[in-house]
Image 1 (cartoon, rainbow, N blue to C red):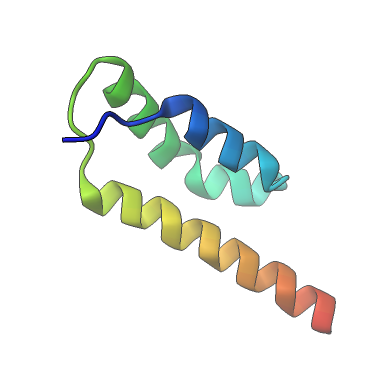
Image 2: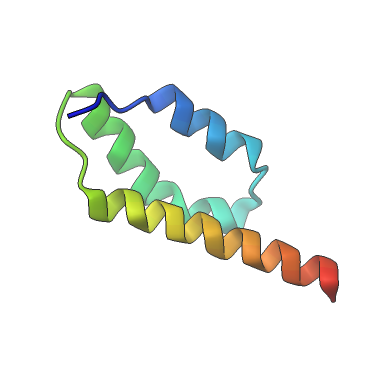
Length: 68
C-alpha cells in the first residue's frame, strides 16, 4: 500500500483557498485522514472519495458563481 502524504493533502487544501463554510464541510474528514496517516493506519478509500467529492462540489460552486 502506498504511503499517504499528509503534507501533500494539506498543501492541496490550502492551495484551494477555501472559505470558512467550505473548510468546515471537509475539516472533519481531513482531520480523520491526517490522524490516521500520522499513526500509520490505513485510510479508507471511501474517506478519500468523500474529501474529493467535497472539493469538487466546492469547485463547481465557485465556477457557478463566476458564471452568474
